[in-house]
Amino acid sequence: MAGQLREYRRRIRSVQSTKKITKAMELIAASRIAKARARVAAARPYAEEITRVIEAVASQSTTSHPLTTGRENAPRVAVVVVTSDRGLAGGYSSNALKRAGELTETLRAAGKDIELHVVGRKGVGFYRFRGRTIDGEYTGFSEQPSYADAKSVADALISSFVAGGEDGGVDEIHLVHTEYVSALTQTAVANRLLPMVLSETDGASTTSAGTPLPQYEFEPSAEAVLDALLPRYVESRLYAALLESAASESAARQRAMKSATDNAEDLARIYSRLANRARQDAITQEISEIVGGANALASAG
Amino acid sequence: MPIRVAIVSPEQEVWSGEADMVVARTTDGDLGVLPGHVPLLGVLAPGGTVRVKTGGREISAAVDGGFISVTRQGVSILAETATLTG
Image 1 (cartoon, rainbow over the protein chains, first blue to last red):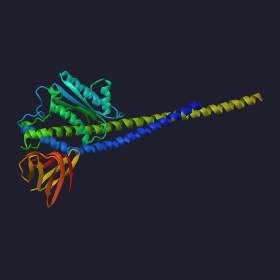
Image 2: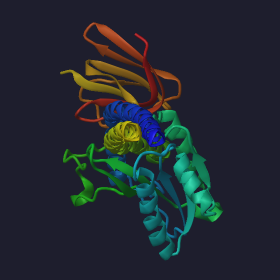
Image 3: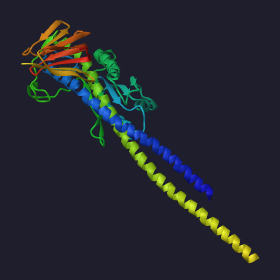
């Protein structure tokens, strides 16, 4: 009887210390969402400006550049998947990986060779376990990515893209990341990074925002400007994707940890109820033993 | 009529405001932008400075690896790294 009571008490203690950990993770994740969201907002002016500039250049330059027009025959493509470094974030990483799986299926069905680039330890582990070749892995910054991190990912992609599929590089770059819709909703999305998907407008004379595109003069030349723009564009898009993913990861983790905390509370309540009953049972039994003993003595005497 | 100027780096907007003149060095040489300048997109020389004259003051920023985009709406300096130097 007393042994059972001790067992319940032990479980209550263990559940409560788990709850402390999950609660702390929940709070940390909540504060990280806000931080990541602020950085997404801070990065927006640059990203918007660079996209606008490229749209303007693409709409008026007559030169065909791989950045905007793509190559005729594109047998090799790169797929970049953004996942988290740590687990305990609900379905965050597996949703991104599922989306990446769909994308690679379609690409493979179209007869393309896939080069896989993975951000985040969870993704690396996933593909390594399945024996897939990983052409590039980037870990250690999934929660708080900096521009330098985005650059490190972009560098490999850009040199591969510039080389082109025939020289062991790639002709297209696809990116799978998780978009932060709200604290409750994060969706894994797949986009083509390169060649650029230009917003098709009438005669391409307005930007996606609706303002007329400027008729630029170039210094030194349109090609030189596009050459210089290509890496910046990839870096900026990757950086934005990493930040969005970091916000999503924190949001997913916050939610997962919140339900873990709630669950721990429920368990602690159930166990303390069981412990109380066990204690009461022990007392009742003790009393009945004493009474039984006294009666036996009385009848014997 | 002043021109709207924004100096932005990937991680944040470094400076923005109205100015009378912007001086930057592109790979082709120094470039001064006054109000009404023709739309232009230039590659900035590595390790240069951008000077923004506003009122009596002058703001300069160390800018590395970027672009200057001049449109009817204003001037934007897109830099990989940008730091205000005073």
